[in-house]
Image (cartoon, rainbow, N blue to C red; front, side, top):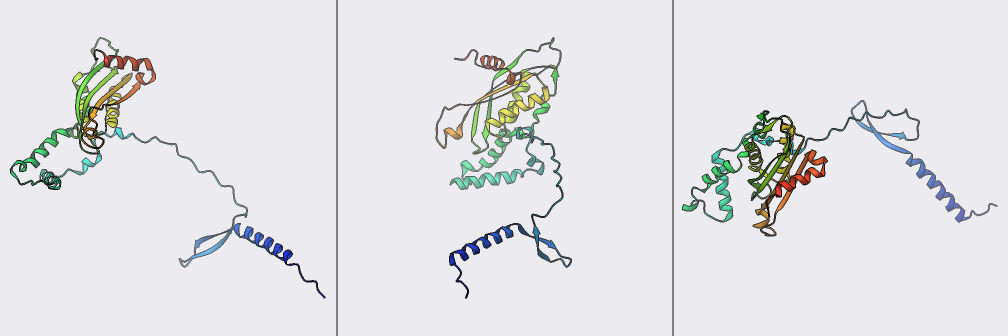
Length: 270
């Protein structure tokens, strides 16, 4: 006569056996290999099998991406622009979308006027800021102190809403190989302002081109502006000023130089 097996003991054994099976299955994984006929067949791989020592992959040195402000002119311009007729047709479409009749007397010539105005307002796309700074005057009797041009007025357009923002730019640099014509700095400001912009990008672009072409000991740029996209729409807060700055070289490394620059910019102002 055989003793009746204890059910609790059997359940415990079954559970342990199931755990062991699960552990064994987990050590295996499926992989696919291409068969000679071109079919994909499942095969078993034992992850616990000894493997050859894997060689560490070579890590390529990290290269910092080129800053967006280094691109002077958008690459899209190389693909060609729409014709004047296409641009005028686009303005007529916007007039209709706004709810007016582009064929009425007051708006009949508006598309042509807008296209002509855009040619001036966004003329910065046709100007190379680097070329403006290529001519340097070296006969300055060894002058190497700060050169500051302040209160340069500019008018630009927000790239988010194509609404104007305007203000003043202040530029200072410490020359090393000579000085550039003062009007050229104002032209550099206009070059970047007459594009669809953000104030932050424009400030960095001005500092970038001066640093890369003139190679000065230091560059400081301060831009203060009022944005009509904030005054006319959205929160509709007029009279709010936005200030952005960029410091390079001596101005970035020495806080006293920053103080000197800001003092000169604010000198004579209430």
